[in-house]
Image (tube, rainbow, N blue to C red; front, side, top):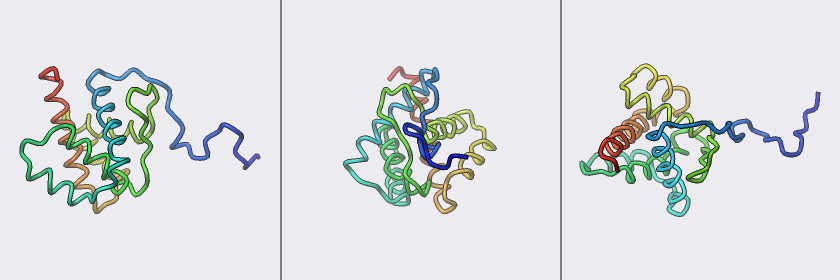
Length: 150
């Protein structure tokens, strides 16, 4: 049994890219918005989950970009680790990105059981409510944007 990782093999399977898959147009747009927000967040720093949700909940005219930025800046705090998010347009899909897409899809189809399971499987208990709010808003706003052809 070889315990030393071979050259080119990821040490952590979480960082290994998943095979390229065909995403529905709405999911692809949602994913690219999150990836773009993650790039913006790298220069803007992280945000406190409670503070970000409080600001967004007061703003009734919140945009998809604002919610995506909130998710990208708060996701490390919610997960308790740094998520793997690839650059916009990349054909690969990380485990963290796949999880986010599933969470938003469960919110969009109002599947409370799947939504709750996905939150409980990854999100630190004290941040589940706020991450749920952000994911539900992401689903609502990206669905509305797709309906209006934006």
